[in-house]
Every structure is written in C-alpha cells, then in structure tokens.
Image (cartoon, rainbow, N blue to C red; front, side, top):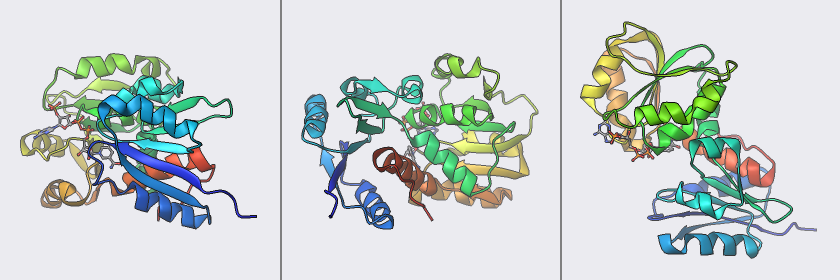
Length: 267
Ligand code: NAP
C-alpha cells in the first residue's frame, strides 16, 4: 500500500526566497517518502489561525522563518528546552495528543556542519560575532558541545541580556562557558563563528589577528553574502573557512528528522 502524502510547509513574510521546498523534497527522495512541501506567505495577524488550522487539517510539520521565529512561540502548546532558552522556533510538529510542539534546529544544523568540516568545539575558545536571532539560536548547542564562547557584536547593549539568558546552561559545569569578548585580552581563539548579516571590516580585523592560522572561520551567511568574509580570510592567510550553506541544509535535515524520524544526508 502506498503511504499517504505528508504535508509540510515553510511560513514567513517574505517567503519567495526560501529554498526549503527544494531541500525537503530532495531529502524525501532519499527515503522514497511521499511529501508535499509548500511555501506560504502569512500575514502576521493571521499567524495563529494559520498554524492551528494547518495542524487541525492533518499537516505534519511547519518550518518558520523571518519574521516569525519568536512570534510563533505563542502558537505552540509546548516547547523544547532549547526553544525555550533560545526563545526561537523554526520547526513545528504535532504529537499524538494533537499538541503543537515548537523546536529550533539552527544550532543542531550548525553542529552537524561543523562536524562534517572537522571544526572542533570541545574545550575550544570560540568567538561568536553577532547578537541577533541567529547568534542566539546557535549558542545553546555550542555550549552543550562544551565550547568556551566569547561573544561580540557591533553594538554592545544586547550582550549582558544574552549572557543572562543562557545562565541555566552555563551554570551546569558539564557545558561550555559564555563570556564577553575583550579586545584587550591577548587570548588566541580556535575558531570564529560570524552571524552578522553584513561583513564589517572594522569588527573583523582585530578578531582575525587573534586567531591561530589553524583556527576555523565559519560564516552563517552563504552565497554572495558570504563572499566578503571568504576573500578576507584568504587575504589574511586563514585557510579553514566555510559559508553557512551546509548549516542551511543541516538545520533542514534536523527538521526533517523531527517530522519523519529519518535524518537525511546533506552531502
Ligand atoms: P538579525 O537578528 O537581524 O541580526 C543581525 C546581526 O548582524 C546583529 O548582530 C547586527 O548587529 C549585525 N549587523 C548587521 N549589520 C551589520 C554591520 N554592517 N556591521 C556589523 N554588524 C552588523 O539577523 P539574524 O537572524 O541574526 O541573521 C544573521 C545572518 O545569519 C543573516 O544574514 C542570515 O541570513 C544568516 N542565517 C543563516 C542561517 C543558516 O542556516 N546558514 C540561519 C540563520 C541565519 P547590531 O545588533 O549591532 O545591529
């Protein structure tokens, strides 16, 4: 018997740029899984109505992109610990009792990609550049992987709040640590993860000087938006760098696993 088609979608506003349908349909082919995956432009005022209606009508899963990753929290009946601490949801699923569950897979996606690239985290000193939604959604998993993180941003106001937000994780000595980056500190870093939406020479120059040549540089951006940092790394002799395209695929793979119980390969 042919299994019924599972219905998934990504919601956002705007949404036309999303590559999620192509990615999920190609994952489904790996398992011969019958899947439909749409992209849906949702009006912010209709978000809850849309989400509840989608699952009431038998939908399997929703991905959530900008600007709804926080707003969608109130549409879920329950959240994973990671989504609660990060205050971000990019994946909605439904359990057997019909409860809608919110989760975030950005951090898992990043970890899978760093593993693929052999960029080590455990007990390493890692600089996280940026304090936007993306930075917050990766810190939980980096800490769970026992990385010692140093956080910097163009504007400093958000940083103390982020340190407080992750205290439940950093209070556990089995996890990594989180501190503010100090440019006067002569520490050598083992890696940099940049999550800023635009390359900034002023911000990146001093940081690159504090990296060992064997250190890695990972940019969450991909495509044209990752090019400036790639050129900069080449100029500075940093050979181990990567764009965030693998993370894009791997966070989608983690959502796929939540909905369908199978982790696709991103190769
Ligand atoms: P966001 O919430 O708007 O935050 C933007 C961040 O970039 C802030 O830290 C901001 O600093 C900084 N920034 C913006 N312009 C800057 C400039 N000219 N110089 C220095 N810093 C600047 O955005 P987000 O959701 O965190 O996303 C950040 C990037 O990550 C986006 O480009 C997004 O496409 C990418 N991303 C990739 C993936 C993936 O799967 N690969 C996943 C999520 C996000 P201030 O606080 O000082 O304004």
